[in-house]
Amino acid sequence: MRKALSIVFLVLLIDQLIKIYIKTHFFLGEEVNIAGNWFIIHFTENNGMAYGLEFGGQFGKLFLSTFRIVAVGGIGYYLWTLTSKKEDKLYIVCIALIFAGALGNIIDSAFYGMIFSDSNYDIAKFMPAEGGYATLLHGKVVDMFYFPVIEGHFPSWFPVWGSEDFIFFRPVFNFADFSISVGVAMIVLYQKRFFGKNKQDISTESIDENKIENPPTTE
Image 1 (cartoon, rainbow, N blue to C red):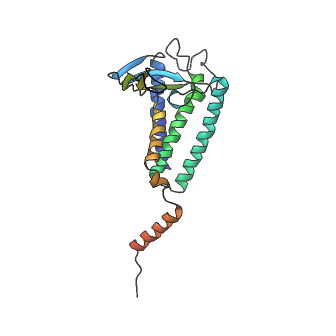
Image 2: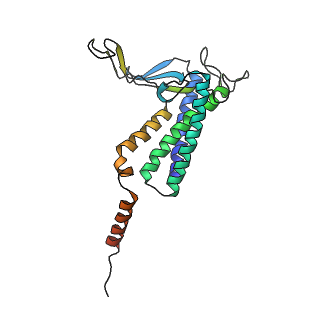
Image 3: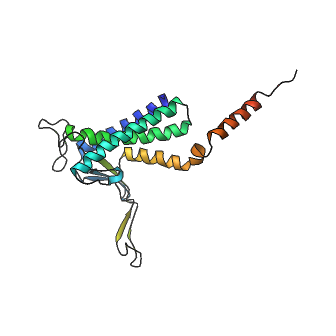
């Protein structure tokens, strides 16, 4: 459990330090090129889900924030059960990364509207005297990492998007999104290790290994 908590704490610390710095030093829409035109720090905010996806309206925002809290509570409980049962350590790391990332974005949604001023017309202020830009659970998620590695346009014969411009990778995201993505990717990559064996197989293997380590003796 200590390792899982350490991962959660570290992800949250990095995520929130980056977000608070961007929020209090950048105008909304301001960007800085870090590595040419393919790695850009671009400050944007969204009302919705990971990678800037939206879930419409104030009711949608409230529903999404509430759903996130319930979902993160469930993930947290699942993480606790995994550590209690001493399940696969790598799987626990994956769930800890997903839990930390989801919790990081919930912090934005739940509290940023109350503790920061609006970023639309000025650099945001922390704990402004006039109050924040939104109420509890109506804050916006801060995003900043932008990787427009490939830019071009689809050929005219291409279905649906023919002749339209494209950018890969278009979504702007944050460290919490990255943490979630790494956790999910690792689960997909190691799914056979995590889910490919049932408990009967594992029990049989444990018995076989025990026989090898402690062979029967004859008197």
